[in-house]
Image (cartoon, rainbow, N blue to C red; front, side, top):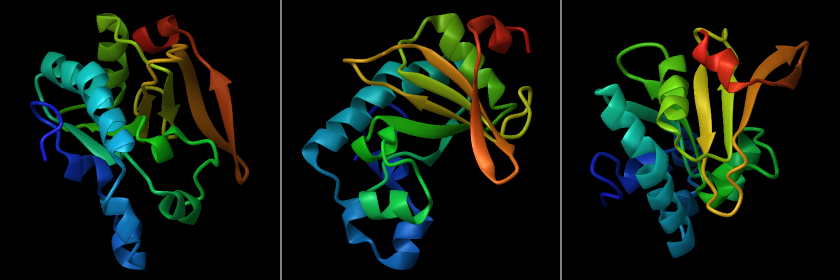
Amino acid sequence: MRISENFTLKELTISQTAVRKQYKEQFDPSAEIINNLKTLAEEILQPARARLGCPIRVSSGYRCLRVNKSIGGSSTSDHVKGLAADVHNTNGSDIEIAKVILLMGLPFKQMIIEFGTLAEPSWVHISYDKFNNKQQILRAYKQGRATKYKTLTRKDILDV
């Protein structure tokens, strides 16, 4: 099922954890979750892809509760509501996705530059919530075994 010009429901619900553990509910999201994924794709993912001029790969979109718990996701994760995606640039650094979103002025709830380095993050988490697009930008990093977060500014990202 296509949810935008270049994104499908399948790619926004794919989960190796769900396949391996046979969590069938991962692949049968509610109408509300499908609508949230559609809005995320239309408002952020599709416009960013069009501006980048290359595909954006989603490594994690919707996560059913059991998948989220299995991978150690936050209990308040926007992934479980279909409001978030972890994305990769198929033709360059993932930070370029973050830059494009900021330069286009796309509305987002949260952007997290996750692990790796600021210039070469492991991935970019982006969420959209039409009732709470607070434009929060964070950098996730490890301190020992703990994941820590540092607040960033638009300038921090655009200057990379």
